[in-house]
Amino acid sequence: MNRRHPSRVRTAILQVLLILPLWTTASAQDEPVDLEVVTLIRNEGLRHSEVMETLSYLTDVIGPRLTGSPAMREANEWTAARMTEWGLVNAHLETYGPFGRGWSFSRCTVHLCAPRQTPLFALPKAWTPGTAGPVRGLVRRVTLESTEDLEKHKGQLQGLILLLDDAAELELDGDEAFQRHSDDELDELVTFPVPADRARRGDRRGGRSRYAGRRAFQKTLLKYLVDEGVLATLSVSSQPNGILRVGGGGSRQPDESPGVPSLVMAAEHYNLLARLVERELQVELEIDVEATFHDGDPMAFNTVAEIAGSDLADQVVMLGGHLDSWHAGTGATDNAAGCAVMMEAARILQALELKPRRTIRVALWSGEEQGLLGSRAYVKEHFAYREELEEEEGSENDRPRQGELILRPEHAGLAAYFNVDNGSGRIRGVYAEENAAVRPIFGAWLEPFVDLGADTVTLRKTGGTDHGSFQAVGLAGFQFIQDELDYSSRTHHTHLDTYEHVQAEDLKQASVIVAAFAYHAAMRDEPLPRPPLPRTVGTGRTIPNR
Image 1 (cartoon, helix red, strand yellow):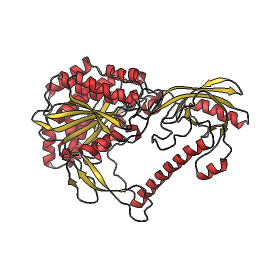
Image 2: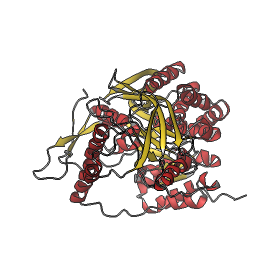
Image 3: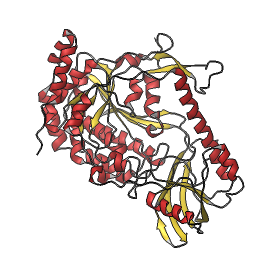
């Protein structure tokens, strides 16, 4: 059995004390931690947990929650009702958008008919149409990555099923697919690499221009496939071992073509088709996909509920995770786990009848998988946004430049935002987001959880989660460090993202740590120190909320 290294919390605090001013040293030593409340939180969260019941309902009963789908709306309403049952107040759905069309599918079968017969494993990409019954067609491998490719194959694709990718080169994994952070990895995470110079403005424009070009080509390709009479397209899964990783394919905008039925196929089955085609055999498939576009309401929704504060009720501590998912699995690790943890943290605090000074607000986002849409819309509506400036004449960037940061009155009242969205692994610490002032504070808050494996505070940043929407406007937003488990190797956006890949003990541990962080953030005399406001064109100003 490996013996734990000395606590990285203590190590990290000592490192900070050596380099920070004396007044910061004093605040690190004096940061209050209510151990009596921590004991109550641990007992309620570890011995009377409801986190797996919450997760089971979201995944097994409601299922996948693609933004805009009926299941996503059901999840919004159920989570609001559930938190109301626990005693939270002001539970409601906040609207943003328009998001676009909803989409869901109910059936998908793919069968190899020639040169032999066998079922194949594939699932449709989101926002692509169904087949309106079984369709049969010959298979051809084509490359359609440029306008020159489209012109080359024009008039030759009628009634065909197209393989759009080369055969995958598979690297089969073994037991290493399930991983936890080692002591050495956590120690290394505490070190801070000096960042390199940022890209020049011209480079950023070039990247944006390339993104716009790819999006424009994708719209052209979707219409081209319909015009050419293509029956369906197949892409290869990026994962080996029969794992399907599936995202979006068509357009969710009602005025744009969704293309033709487009599926992702298990790499081993896709490679089989590619080899058969390479032999110049007559390869025939039958495909049957039932998919539905939901055009009744183009708006999307976030779920919000609160534990009311007392003397500092106008200030807010927020807990968040994204409720939406992709459609191949049931969105268990991405991110019903994070939402269940945040809901459970609030339930624990409510069950203990603690009276926080600040309001504790739970927000469950939609549209995260399409670009943090829900949290960005919420931040824009409640806290801050940037003015859009017209592009300079002759600029290659088709997106407006971002100008002055406009602060809403609520911006001053957000004490902190905490996020969980890296699978179902236990919390090992927290990213301080280059905010040296919070590092000793978080270190003190983690001390009671060293025995549960959480003892790392790093000044490093992390990206790709909804805390970034808050950081982008100068708010204190944080993501916890979590064990990887098999998140990247097996479950992320795949059909294996199901209840079975969630670790109950890890979610219980995460819930009590989040509850303790929320409680202490709500009870401090001062809000958590903030990062500096981002640089903008102009000096920044405050305007009323709409």
